[in-house]
Structures are given as structure tokens and as C-alpha cells.
Length: 430
Length: 66
Image 1 (cartoon, each protein chain N blue to C red):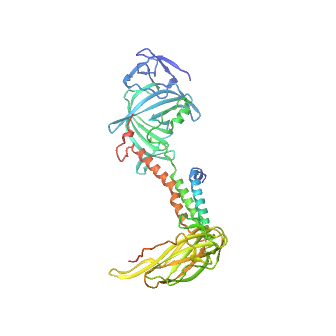
Image 2: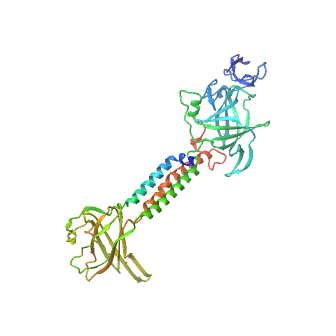
Image 3: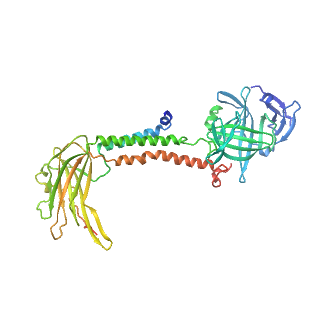
């Protein structure tokens, strides 16, 4: 890019101009005088205070590639707004390409935006999610903040007549990662569209060897993590459908076969309480066995000490269950306690021939205790509790993303005109 | 549809692994319950069932009822 040099009319220092005839004002880097470069007779417009001098993150003359086009930084200004008594400032870089024209690059606390002039006027549309909105190129932008921005410092050259303390009303509308800015002066209204960029993207665009400072906080148009919550929840719903299909499949293929059903009797007068059942066969794959006991107990209890024993291998599953059932009437009316029926689920039992060893026990107090009970053994009973347990586990990622997104959006909008409470100290200006 | 899968690839992997695990566990009849003791019973149990002492045979009960 061709560079032209002029002498500062204030200090005589050399001022480089890279913007061809587009530059209407330039700032002398030595004395911070704003020079009117729109005509050969260079005149002084204003002068910035040296106390306001800031060091740009990207030096003038740096070249960066955006959208395949090479742009050079020819100007930088620091702008600031005041919200609730707090000053927030950011840097704006003016980029120039002789064929593509001007673009802007803004940075606030490590959050970058590549800004282009809007192609056409946005349209005012109905409120969107409770906020005023603009429609631009088919996308709805929500109002985020309105503030009066002031230029507090500038260096380089600009295609407008720069004024110290120049103020414009800025209305920002967002549709992350886009930001639509409406800048209002007494003479005109201009629109520009920014696209959020990370520090890594900017460093890559300018081929920087040292990394830029990390972003802190959440910026207005910063893309949210888990941006598409709709597809996340759609995934959950589809997985849920898969779970139900799996449940139906398992229900259909399960044997659910009663392999033993016998009525037995026990009396505390029996000399030998323990007994064994006939041999029954458990067929099919390794799966569960459900053993149900139903008694005719009334105001009594019975303990069933049982073992399921494989006749061939001797492998045994021992288990015990108490069955008790009491009922009566008192001043509150009729009451019952316990259940005369109990069931046990034995998981992962291989196929083979089995029998049950049953050793009942009842109260050994005075008097005869006896009970009849049935033992029913069912092979491969569908139990869906593992699948039901999978439902909350399936929901966890979607819930986590929703909470994360909600927290992020709360942080985002805390910096807007719609904050529900004042900004946290973490979000204070540097 | 492609975005639904690719945009949530980790979620799909997690979900399908979970479904697969739950399905296999259900298929094999697994359970978290640890009430069952596995041991080898002697051949004589059928002849003398009273001699066999299972893990639960020492049960003592506190009588309930209202």
C-alpha cells in the first residue's frame, strides 16, 4: 500500500497517510494534533490530551486478512461510554483495503468484532423475546444497549473529520455472533454489522507471534456455548424414543415363563422344617429369575430362608424373605400392616436344572403356628427399572447444557439495558 | 438431520452407550441388589435339606404388628 507523508502543522513531525484521498483527518503521533487533510493547506482541527494517550494492541500499519482480503490498520480510536457512573472504553481500529474500502475492528476486554458497513437499512420489527428488535437480512436482532459514545483518543488517519470529544448515540442490537450497531448523530444515522472474533482468530489474521490477551467476561454478541439447545433436546427426545423401542423389544423377547408353581405347608410342629422342591429347568440365555411367595398368614409372620441350587454345578443363590400380615380394628377403624406376598429377583442366572431349598421359620412362642404358601418361579421376567434409570442419565447432558446456556445468557444480559441487577464487580471497566 | 448428529456427536455417543449398557444389563438380568450370596452347595442338600446352612439361616426376628 502506498504511503504518503505530510508534516504536522503544529510540531512539524512526519505524519504518514495510507488511505489515499479517502483520509479527511489524521492525528500526529508526536503531539496528538488532529489535522484536516481534506485539502493541501493542512489545518489544525483539535488536539488530544497527552494524558489520554493509549497504546494500541495492534500497531498502525499492521496487516490482517479477513474474508480473503488483506486490510491494513490506518487508524485507531478509543471510545467510551458511561453507564451508571462507570466508564467503559474500547478500541476501534480502522482497516483499509484500496479495493474493498474501510472496515473496523473493535476490541473490549479481549472480545473482538470485525465490523462492516450494513448493506441496506434494517427494518423495525415487533418486539422479540420482550425486547425492541430490528430485522436485517432476514435475521432478527434484539436491542441490547443504548449509550452515548465519545471518542477519547485517536491516532492515525480517518475518512471523516475527527473531533475531540465527538459524541454519537449508539444503539446495539444482537443476534450472536452478529452485532448490529446504529450510530446516530444530528446529521445522519449509520448502521454497521459486527461479527464476533476470538483473540486467536485475530492473532491468526494478523499472523501475530505473541498471543493476544484472553477475553474476560461475556460480550454482547459472544456466541453462547451449546448454541443450539433445540437440537440438544431433540437428541434427548430421539434417545428417549430409542429407549422405549428398546424396552418394547426386550419385553417382546423375554420368556416370562413360569417354570415352577407349588403350594406348600409349614407347621411349627414339623420336626424338619427344611425341604426341597422338585427339579425344574431354567431355559434360554443367562437372565433373571423371579421367585414369588404368597402365604395365607393373618396376624402372624413367617421367614422363608431359601436357596436356588443348580443340580449340576451345585452353584447356590441364598436369600431370605420375611412375610408378615397383620390386621385388626381399633379406635381409628380397620388397619392392616405388612403383605402376605413377597417376591425376590435373582439376577443373571445361567440356564440349567435347579431346585429350591426352603427352610421356613415362624414364631417359637407358645402355641402352634402354621401357614400355607405358594412358591412360584418365573424365568426371564422383564424388569425395566434399569431402563427407567437411564432416563434421568440421558437427560443430564441436555440439562447441563441448558443450565450452562442460561448462566451464560444471564451474564450477557447483565451488561445490557435489561439487567435485572447491577453489574458485578468482575464486570467493571479496567 | 446431519447437524442434529454432528452437532451433538458426544451426546449421541454418550446416549447410545448408555442405552447399550442398560439394554445389555436388562438382557442379562443384571441387578444392583446384593442380597444374593453365591456359593456352592453340597450334593447332599437334596437328601438332607436341614443340614444346609445358608447365609440367611441365622435370621432372628423382632415381632412386629400394631
